[in-house]
Length: 157
Image (cartoon, rainbow, N blue to C red; front, top):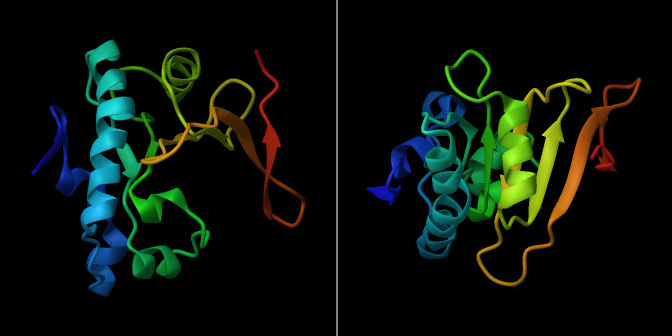
């Protein structure tokens, strides 16, 4: 099944953890509809802009999978509303290029520069709410000295 021209449901739901642990990672009707909106409004425009394959490191996470990996209980991944893009080691745009394109050109609910440094995030998290207005919130994920994740509002222009 295709969520958009260049994104399959299998790619969006792929998880080594789910596979290893025998966790069903199939989205239900509402989550599937949210995934289609995310694919059409976020993934597909990125793919068409760069004319290169875009690699998703994390897409949909069932509640069981999200719990297994220690994800946030409010994760938009568990609603079919978020993807993590990681272009490291792949031909095409960099993670920075993807982040900047989304920030400057697409409607999104949340965009996160995930760790990395001032030049390049380790990956890019982006979400698109199925219902309701998009917040356009831009954050940067960091870790403190105890290795606990925290988020700062984006300040880089």
